Length: 318
Image 1: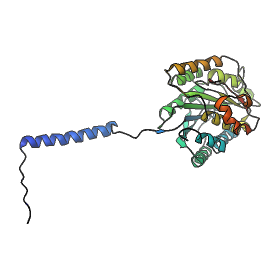
Image 2 (image 1 turned 90 degrees about the vertical axis):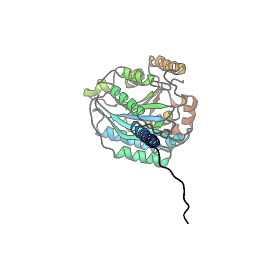
Image 3 (image 1 turned 120 degrees about the horizontal axis):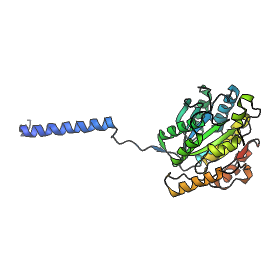
């Protein structure tokens, strides 16, 4: 026998109140969805956000382009680089690979990718080799730097350290002042390191571009690099680029100087020290004279890299 349950009809006032509550609930949910108010998972933490910004201007011919690409690919497959990545607190870094040329010629070749083991490192290497060349224009290091800053701002990961790795074979000959772009990056807490590729036999058309007064390494010291721990590595030629990038990546990944917020006294002090060093002549430092954590890292194997690559180091911590 079915049990009878007492019930009553809702009054008009109660019905109206219930209807309004339901409508308010749907309205709040809809607003949260459209405005992005629904709580999202925290961004993944990595030890380093690294933008690889490679010069593919007209002075980088097809042979040099392939050597540069192959050098980057080989570096990320190198066991010493992978060991350096695993040595951080999070045991992983996030990297994006971009190429730049003229003021309006920048492209993301590989979007943000987390590298934490051999598999992800090799996958990143393969993608570098497979991507086609986008353009060959003038050389705007400033526009390349600005583009790299945009990529850092759009990174879906979080890290205490944000670094732009600029490689090139010439000075800034297009776009806005490169030192102004550098200073804006420093103000945002970003460190810019340089990889200078020297031209052995400069052609007449590119002689002053690839060999500016005082040398290209000096030019990068004065105008391109900046921020805590900033340094320049010099590859004697494109053939030694792969060895240079291995050393440079290990130096960046094992960087002993923590980055501070742009408005902190320590950050301003470190930046001022880099500025004071930048006014000096270029300093070429043999690997044997490196100090601190970077020296220890190199002593564990990086100093076995072919000696034809010269380190030219400007470091806020030295």
